[in-house]
Image (cartoon, rainbow, N blue to C red):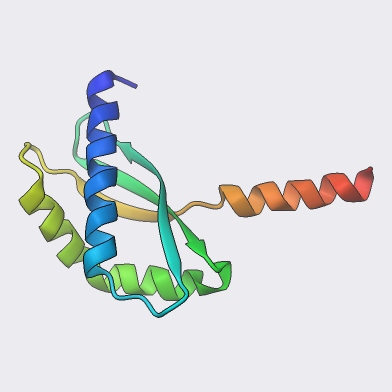
Length: 110
């Protein structure tokens, strides 16, 4: 990955995190963190990987993000001074749950 893409990923991560903190209205006790940002080399798309706690609220959070994606995208577009403006797509990061699953299996074996 180029250094430019790395810097853009970090910039988008900071802005989306700030926008979600201020603009996204989630019910109490639900936490969303940005695990990773992956921008395409042509800067057209950015995949934002999020982790959700508790995991049982994944469906609720994804539906809320689907409803508010245009507001989040619009605010991001206002903050970023670049062209093209990448279109964001949210994906649930399953790394943590898969790691827990593997750890349980290893304990069963050992």
